[in-house]
Image (cartoon, rainbow, N blue to C red; front, side, top):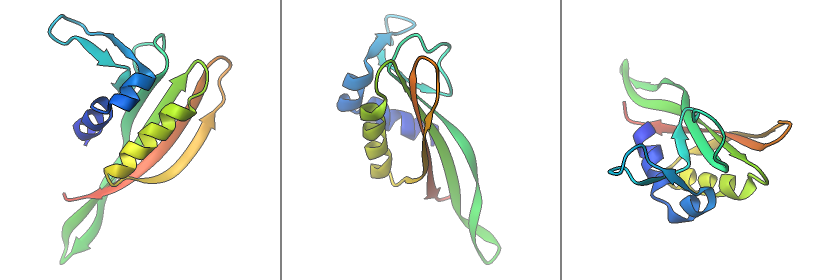
Length: 125
């Protein structure tokens, strides 16, 4: 699921235009969008999107066989100014993938703007 989410976010030109790009670790990788699995090493490059799998497990059974798994991901958008535009684009892309929003919150930080969303999706095992 992590790869699918990353590919969806990183391939969206509108989102990449909002978060910008950083130089890759090598010349082969090239410029990569400021979208990270887990947290970036530092939040020096802003705005940025970070995500992680928060939870998951078997949820639907038929004849003692799991037929659906719930996956929960956490999305964090951190920006110098407003995180709202970036968050709205991420929200749109996740909903296109079939995710349902469980919770959205503003995280109080002394310097940066930080918005977090929790999303879930049912998938095949």
